[in-house]
Length: 154
Image (cartoon, rainbow, N blue to C red; front, top):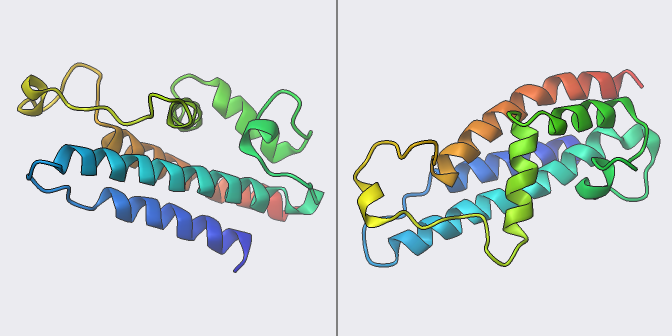
């Protein structure tokens, strides 16, 4: 499988997980949280795959997103573009990096929905992780074409 195919596959699998119904039985809340964190973990793998894909021409030894998107990352145009995107607080990549840090923390990324909040359509700016993941996946997929185009120019 090519890096491009793997990136596409992981993004698709993350979307599929988010479409899974958690049901309404007693463990439904835990199942929803597990599904959201599973989709987020797949998204992290997709980010790794994307970084491998757009830096193929540089023949990097490592493709850890923390290293490549950090200040000390390789000076590749695609990485520079992604670093700038990650620095914008309202961007999909800034959101993703924040949620991935939470995923790796002892608290995790998914949150329980309080009993009072379940019946409400929206609770302030506290959108469910699954809804935010859907938005983030759509934004990332829109960005892919441009990243792939500049990478292929090499």
